[in-house]
Image (cartoon, rainbow, N blue to C red; front, side, top):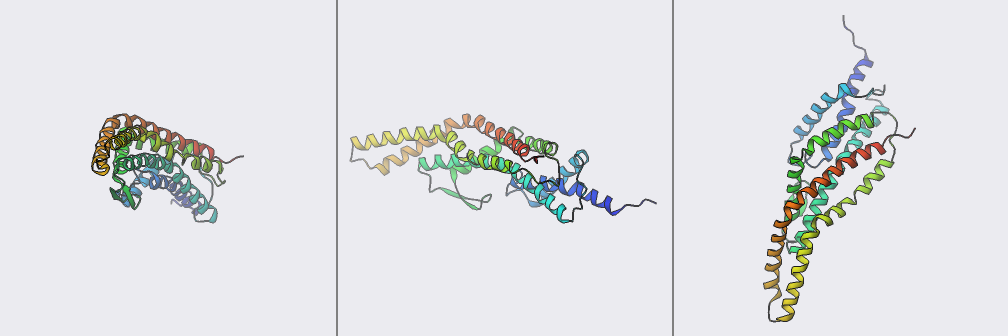
Amino acid sequence: MITITTAQWYAWIAAFVWPFLRIFGLILAEPVLGHASVPQATKVGLAIFISLVLAPVLPPLPTVEPASAAGILIGVQQLLIGLAIGFTLRIALTGVEAAGQLIGLQMGLGFAVFFDPQTSAQTAVVGQFLGLFAILTFLSIDGHLMVINALARSFSTLPISAEPVNPGGLRLLADWGGEIFRTGLLISLPVVAALLIANIAVGILTRAAPQLNIFAVGFPLTLAAGFFALWFAIPFMGPAIEKVFEQAVLVGLRIVEQLVPVR
């Protein structure tokens, strides 16, 4: 007769639950797999599937009961680690959307906003357009597979342990938050520069002919120049966005390395 002890049950539960929490945290924070349009059941199912695949090859787990206080702390720690990895990609996508908002503001489309279900807030139409473009670019470079690969590597770099993580990784995550402004400025700079030239031309024109209505002439001209500059710049934005996402995945791995407990 086969007998299963309570310790064995706890070991089997822990071998699935703790990896699941790290994986689920990443999916919640990641901008594509965790998008608001993806059903919650799909997110949970994907996390369960990845957990079942990775669980047999994970390093040895701590001998702690999952329902104990120490076990709950380990679970919370794994959830935060997954959120930290996914948040790096969220910051990269937000930087691209910030570039769209800067472009829309310079074009005079600051009033053209849509409700974004992802952030539950009003988003500029150009920002939402560049956000969708960034997501399609992310999928075209197999970014979702890169994220899953980085997640699998994180279990080797930072195994599941009862030891508290090193807070240095959180400092690196906070520093990465400045990438929103850097990415937004660099991606929007060509279009913003072209719009600046168009605005200067409109200013000179209205100065030379004061009888011209700046609102009747300047707004259509700025809008047309903005669309033309955006159309011209879109092919060059793809490689830049690809580089931003690749850098975000590398930063996620660096954060995991910085979270390794100091012994």
